[in-house]
Amino acid sequence: MHVLVTGGAGFIGSHTVAHLLTDGYRVSVIDNFSNSSPESLRRVANLVGKSPELYNIDLLDAPALKNVFESLRPDAVIHFAGLKAVGESVAQPLRYYRNNVTGTLNLLEAMEAVDCRTLVFSSSATVYGESTALPLLETTPRSATNPYGRTKLHIEEMLEELAASDPRWAIANLRYFNPVGAHESGDIGEDPQGIPNNLMPFVAQVAVGVREKVSVFGGDYPTVDGTGVRDYIHVVDLAAGHLAALNYLQGSKGAHVWNLGTGAGSSVLEVIDAFARVSKRPVPYQITDRRAGDVAENYADPEKARLDLGWKAERGLEQMVGDMWRWQSQNPTGFPDREFGTMSDQELNEFIRGE
Image (cartoon, rainbow, N blue to C red; front, side, top):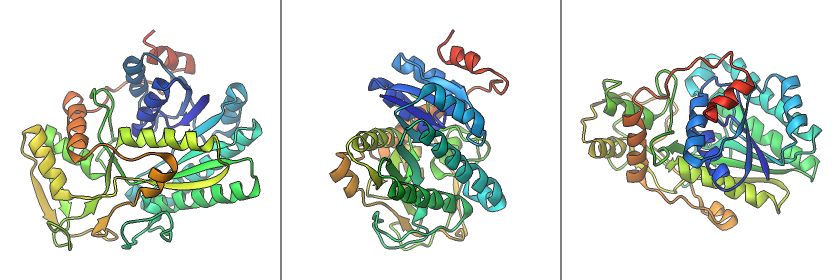
């Protein structure tokens, strides 16, 4: 099977590409490298002994996108590409709607033009908004509290309406919670540009000495230690969930939705303590005021994924932190900087193949 992965050089994308290649899939990647590096795919090729075919394309470039699909004619698509910073989306809502929603629309039209109608979409638990009805089920009412979340919700609705209008489509909306960790080798992991938006990469950067301390937003929640509780999931488990969904779609049309999480939460202080324990380094923190919109707890009910897909998260907090620390300590400033913006597709492919 030939699978095209959008955003395949990113954090979750690169781990999923590695999983696909290991399992014998033919893989092509589309990425514009706005928040990723081809270095991740070069390392994937080194790890698994195979490399994907890479195209430096923006999903907003509809003609180039259609040309690639007409050339490749893939059997299925896993769609990761998109902007994902909540604060940035509040400041630049039109950019987020254009990039995420219009980019997905261009992708769907390119797929339809070559009769490729199998799609696994990278959605998010953000579509549950500020719901406090725990655990969060796939049937929990959806809402959104920021433009980023609304783009995910709009895309889910668009995909549901598409599948309802044309029974040839097979679509998975995967709502995952808080992806963390890294490949066990430490060669690929999360490499956020600028200040990390999420807790674990920020804690990792404090542990490695790149940042001074962690700001803990709120210490008076009704939780085990007063700090917010979230459902963290290892990126390797998450990658396996995408393959399980892809396999399910081979025998089932329509639009489907699954939560991908562990079903249990860890508090901010538990995460900080785990990093200090694993890294054997102090992780200074300061408790500050709560952030608007944050809920005390947020965790999934992943039972539907277990029943339908035969999938469940296997890795606990200690392994998430251990693998993430291995990545961060071996790559304290992330992937090496490289001038790739003007490289041709041929040069990029030669680079990831080590030629």
